[in-house]
Image 1 (tube, protein in one colour):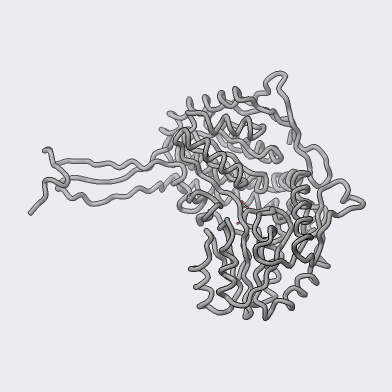
Image 2 (cartoon, rainbow, N blue to C red):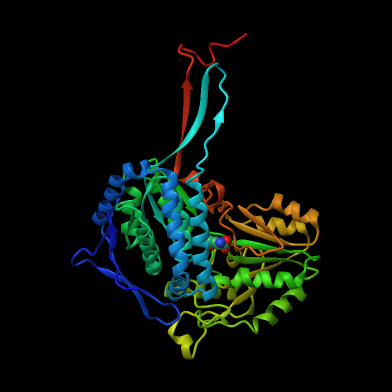
Length: 493
Ligand code: UN1
């Protein structure tokens, strides 16, 4: 894989002469991975122009044909999976099993969306009048902007791009700067599979320049953004001025509720994977563990004991439990929260940057557990790192109250053997996703993904509803009676 990339505009990779560039870094070693153009607002306008120009031909391409192209992207990605998975790990720092999983999630979704090319269902509905058909069809929106984060460097871009393309839109894609190589390599696969020039454009650079120019361009009709709540709010406001559809997937403060009747060994595996998988850098990460007082001491002892054998290190080594956090900025933010936690909570495990030997080249933080009380900053704010806040409760009712009393509502989980309690939790937990006897992470692409409250603005990605984000519904009335019939007026007695 080459390491110097340009912008992809109208089917041509270009590096504007004299353009400023930025580099991406391996967070485990500090090595440079890729070099990218810091695009200007003019570069973004050119990319949007290319997407606008390509739209009419692409929307007329039959949807099953668009699906076939996606199937070819998936086939190529399957062949490239080992290499692309390694790249995810090198550029973002998640352990290799998860790097490969990121790519697999992309493949799963692209294949699912390829099938959508032969569905894109509308509705047929009876008419109140004779000799009249009523139906709906789905139509593309036009140019869509896909703005994606670094924590799932291939999966989240593909959730957006594959859904946008199969429905007939053209795309300008702006990835997170720190994982732009993964993004560029994904784009290449779409190119190789025969996505026509201008249908998928790729721009890189700062959110404040490239992101804003994209969101504010009047030719962009829909913006699909995944990232932090502050940026999301800003994107929403900028998009609102142009009356755009803005789809937001933002943060989480996802709880696992552990009841006193739970299978504790099962919960132990789940909590560790949920809290420290991807070094806690998933929107769905388990960041709060709410434990019934009857099993509280026992479970904490099990947790800290297991962490003694949990390895942090080289994410390319398949034996490693957790890699580095993704960047120097991430490291700073997580360590700041750890300091906050040390003031208002009790540190149970970890709480420090790992130093010495190979650790000194990267951003390694020890898995960290705090005992805290509901209302402390670490129990409420999204940290996006390997920090788990544990809260003790006396009942199911208290557990749910605590679980729901945060600004976010993405994922949630309960461990219990009581089937009635499990169903109550499904009803009671304010979240877009609830797991029973499984951790908060690991959603599958054939189901909708998204959250309530400040996690978003009501939309869902993936699953059967993925096409809604990127389509307009047209309602069609066909009157074959050969006379003027008046709805609501020509009422038959
Ligand atoms: C995210 O963290 O933004 O459910 C996405 C999961 C993954 C997707 C996470 N399939 O954990």
